[in-house]
Amino acid sequence: MALLEIKNLGKTFHTPMGEVAASIFIPSLQLEQGEALLLDGPSGSGKTTVLHMISGLLSADSGSIYFAGEDVSKLPTTQRDIWRADNVGYIFQRLNLLDELNVLENILLPQCWRKEKNKQALRQRALALLEQVGLTQKAACFPRELSIGEQQRVAVVRALVHKPKLLLADEPTASLDLENGKVVLGLLRQLCRENNVALLLSTHDEAVKATFTHKYNVRGGCYE
Image (cartoon, rainbow, N blue to C red; front, side):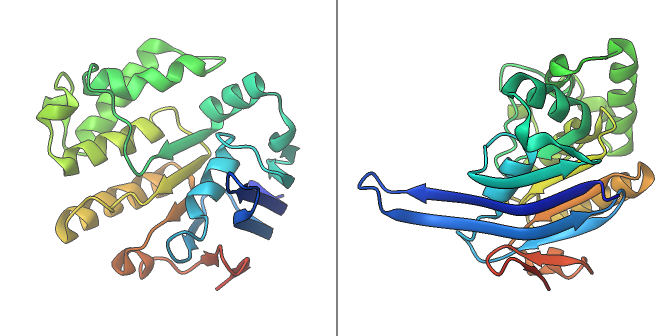
């Protein structure tokens, strides 16, 4: 059984006049535990929308999303939020770090949704991951005090602190220069391998694309 399985997933967006502005259809996609898959396609093809539907942040118009055999696309909103908090890590393109919270607080905030949480254990794991990505001394700093590369590493830690089974990463190197992009991608892939986390990543960066052997074209609805 695949960790993630998508069947006939569809989403259509309309203009205020009722005309079709964009349409996305994923006939079939599977992701095994610990596997890394690249979501490919040109700008506007719907990569972010697909990630949002998988995470439950956006509802699909049709189709199903199975996670470990359960159709999570049919869960009520509250249960879907709990499922996401327990099983999914998400690295947003815009990072979504809160300016009012320090690094450690930003990392731990999403865990308030989890059904079962050991606050002390989560804090210790957050600190351990910060050490692993070279940010031990930044735990009490605020996002504005960090470089973009450091902020991106914080986003990686936030997404992995609760040991998710699935990590969704939306353009995780888009705001970084080449060198910092390599560092962040390397840390991301390393942490996923060490924790057997399935990775589904979208990017326009050709250097990032070259590191993936498995790719799925969103516009074509097929593997490459």
